[in-house]
Length: 190
Image (cartoon, rainbow, N blue to C red; front, side, top):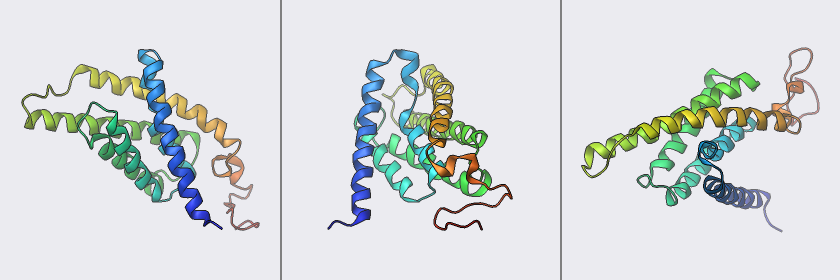
C-alpha cells in the first residue's frame, strides 16, 4: 500500500505539469491583451490562501524552473521571481495581512504579481547591464506588468469566490458567530 504523502506529492507534480501546459497553451491561443493573465502566479497565491505550507515555496521553484524552459528570459529568471513572490506573499499572509477575506486576497494578489514582474524586470536590467548584446527593459515589459495586474487580479477574485463555496478556509462562515475560529481538526469551537 502506498503512503498517502507520496500519493499527494504525485498529485501535486501532475497538477503542476498540467497547470504549466495549460498556461503555455492558453498563452498561444488567446489574443494578445487577454493572454497576459498569469495563471501560475494566480494558482500559487490561491494555494497560499488555502494553505500556509512551506512546500508551496518548493513547488513554486520547480514550476519556475519548468517555466524557464519555455521562456525567452535568461534561465532562472522565472524560478527566482516565482520563488521570491511565493515566499514574500506567504510572509505577508503570516505576518502582516493575516485575514483570508476577499480584500486581502486582492491586495496579496496585486502585490504578488507586482513582485513577480518587478523581479523579472530587475533581472532583465541586470543582464542588460552586464551583457551589451541584451536590449534591456523595454516599454513592453511595463505594459505587460499593467496588463497582468488588470487581468489576473479580477480573475483571482472570480476563482476565489468560486472556491469559497467549496473550501472551508476561504468561506466567511469559517468564523463562528462568537468570532471564534473553527479548526478543521477538531469538531468543536475553540
